[in-house]
Length: 120
Picture 1 (cartoon, rainbow, N blue to C red):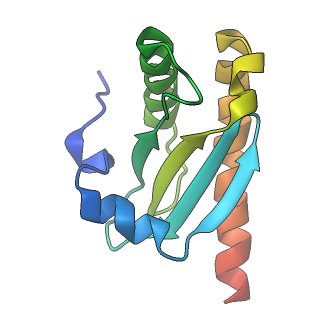
Picture 2 (cartoon, rainbow, N blue to C red):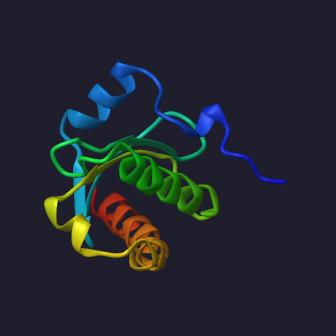
């Protein structure tokens, strides 16, 4: 059974701050992904969902669960730290649409990172 281990999470404020300093960005489908290469051999995720964007706590928690589960199932992500932010238009999408779109978004993020790292 696969679990979402602590080593795959951004836990400390400094971890988030490191990503917020000069991040690469990718936006789509109600989310903004900020990412930056890390010194670990695996991807890590931090989720920041604002009450201003998703005001009901049960809705924020459900979106967080969807993001974590979708991230957990990704095996091809490079060694990057990712912070996921919600956009105001996220509320336009159903949970089913969010879940369906996330797989494509992880793939696009991975491809964008690979393309970016080849350029530098």
